[in-house]
Length: 162
Image (cartoon, rainbow, N blue to C red):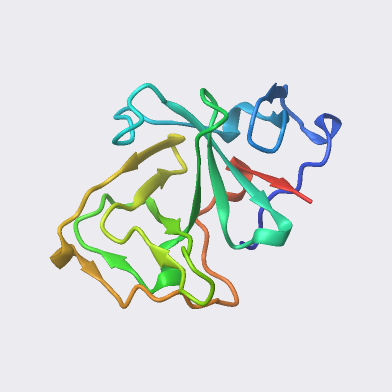
């Protein structure tokens, strides 16, 4: 993922920082790096606050970390990396897909094609949309890309770790 803000210490943040527990240990988040969901993700009804975490060694993948249950996190990537396009999504929202890791060596990465997560940079809200197969275009095969276009302001809403 290109253009992601690098935050190494709380002193590097312009706004007040809170240390919040994650799968990577306590991390410093700015208020603008907290994503909320009005409608909970299916199966995770009690979880409403999340953060996106980018690890340099894992880019362009990012982690969607629950801030209410440290054990809950999902590996995500922009849908373009899987060649996916979706019909009937709200304008201005950036679709990302959950990555399904291979169960066996040599198997391909797969994406949860029919349930993209939409991130609205302006509001800091995320939502998951369940789609019919006919509303999803693309082969769904992972293809590393040189770079993808991020919505303005998105990079500042991601915590980037060295």
